Length: 455
Image (cartoon, rainbow, N blue to C red; front, side, top):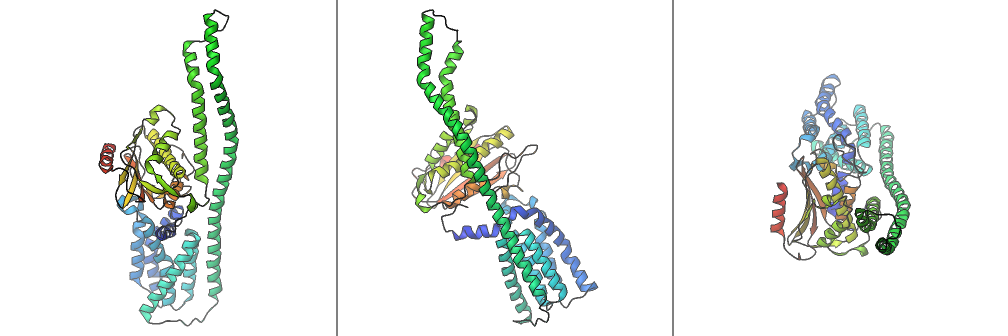
């Protein structure tokens, strides 16, 4: 992950989110089961196998907390931004807190030792290693405080210590296994980078040969065509070349050069998206967002003039940010690539790019009016290796482009967010703290463009 800014809020955000999207399906099944199991096990432990302590209110609270997550795909967009924080709190309550509290309240009864071990095992399955350890420590601490609040006891007399070695074994092996899964993700990134470097090397060599040959032909072709015209004028025996073909020859070499440059740009995008090396502070300098956008639009390998005409760039406002120009250009490449892909799939839409400047924050808005993103997919789009395919189509990427964008923007001290209406629009907002006064004010024009894009 690219980081050079020590941003505590960002670290907390990443810490809470963890690998939520990867385990969402499993956790939703757990929540659906918990909605029924909490009250059901109250009947079991209160009636069939009575325990020293039971609490129906705590169990019903667990069911009530889990129920909204079962229907998360129906959450309004305004609430989806809180999904990860809510998930973290629910997982904290229903697993470590509840089971450890019940274990303490039942004076370390055997059945609650076993239940707590089962809860720890579930945490191993659904959490990343740092979430696992953080929730276990935090849940145990809160359970201890709740136990003291209810009983006034500061210690327990444990008569059977034989469960503790098993308990700590499960904790240790769980942390190690989850840490190994994190290492596997990093190895996957490294493997992708190695493969990308090999592909780039194999492609750049023939591209260099093609470009060099085209440059050589550009130097001599006009003379050859001039000689052909002279030969015709002097009625020498030369094969006839149609006028249309003659005219095409003048542009074909320029086209070859352009395609070679575009192919090199695509290779650069591939390499940029798979790079995970740290960004150093000495690389950072003041950058113009307008210049970054204009560079991206100039260098992006549009497939046709029609595709190029789909971009509407409002040049009325500029602002400065602390970053690296080439990296911001590649962020814009990724946003362009995605927007144009889904506009093509939808068969409609344009891309609107504009700035919003204020004394506190400056924002680059990147909005397309293509097919939009489903509400249940929207929270996952910045997740590395997550790629959303349209219905009846394959995914068009490896799921690293938007993760790369988020890494870069946050490394520059900014933030990137997305909102979308399915079938209507997708809007990315890249927000940066004001590093300097905007060079020109463009909020009014920005609002006008935004209103136009809604139509």
